[in-house]
Image (cartoon, helix red, strand yellow):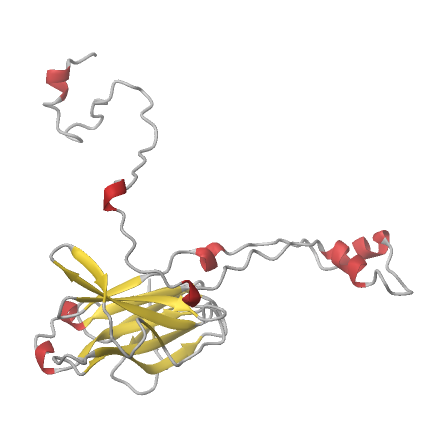
Length: 267
């Protein structure tokens, strides 16, 4: 049944089980959104804090690897021999993990007009860096700390690359007396097999010399499986949940000095 444009405007979407298609083209295709050119503004650039991402390592089959390893040896391995050796190890599957190439920016809004933006930095993206933005009256700018650098870097360096960041501000957890403390939130930095927690404070809170401080609280390494996801409890301050790729779920409380975690039963 064909409907006029006036009738099409009267149909609420999903009012019936099979609502009519309100687009004349039977194949509307994907919806692409692009920002308005006038709205794109460069706030700050700090290329020294970012290293060039390493390209994925070239994949060489096991037989080819065995041949190349003995190429300049007097007892070089023949192609048939390398294939025989590789077959004893079963099928070889190369899995490329693209998580190392994701955009990892995590904002944390402070009680004032500041927004702390966390990101991985360092030679292997194994440190937490942050820059402070001042958001006021629809304008965004980087806060200048004078004698301090505009980009802060944590003194803690991990053994592996950071693949995920998640921040939680205390005001989202119902903490009302933030005006009396310099503590504004928590941050968790996840590597492939570990999670590390920070407390976020504003040193000199309420004065002209206030600046952000990252206080390392502790960490947990998971030897059996990789970390899949991490998030904060939106209702209780300082509770963080870590999900492993095997489905195991752990609860961590920032008020405890030992970060062993409590395994939660799911099912």
